[in-house]
Image (cartoon, rainbow, N blue to C red):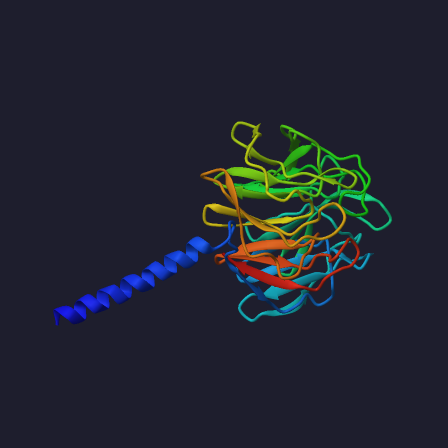
Length: 327
């Protein structure tokens, strides 16, 4: 019996040693996580405003290969299927404030631009339960290519540009930050971004807003990471930069980690998927996107990050791809 136990112990130790050796031999930045393809967007579209309420992801407005829309598309996570909601109030547009702009069961479409070059300040709110759109107080500054994030009952809109026409196009780019008080339906200006930029990404976590990348000039992208504290109205700079400089990316979260996914290097789409550890202020790599995209939308739900639509390989080559990443 003792000999059998000894043999079994040696066998288990050999398996463990082999597993450790395999792990040690894995390359630096070993890719982790899994991508799953989902029912495609009904029409290839980029620049949509995307958010989620319960098991429903809302993808509103956006440009279908250069043609602006005011369509409301509803994706049922459980059924992996799409349906249509009431179209949004005009004008049709794309590149409204990116980020998951859902709050208290509503999706907010903030600003944006048209294919004719106009930029907007108006704000429309969608109720997916009643399938109704409502117009609320407009922003103080009309813009496209901004990013938004919600903290408590306040939505913050950060950066952007005064022109429409795609990421890293003509400026001027903005450092402007405004906040919308949901309770009072009013806007006010708060502390500006440390540097002007557009087509950036943001995630609210722990009462703070983390901002990633963006365009700093036509054709020029950055890997800068900053953090805004709404309580003190201050920005923290000098955080660990992204490994891959890019703009027009999306950012999602799972636990204490934030995922910066896709985007543009200033010319074409990239498939980068990098994870930011807030506690250690450090970056590592994850499984790259199956389909590189820029100008996509995102929603984090149930431990997964959903990436909806976008453009590949460049602006105005719209994609119907819809997939999710499980860290």
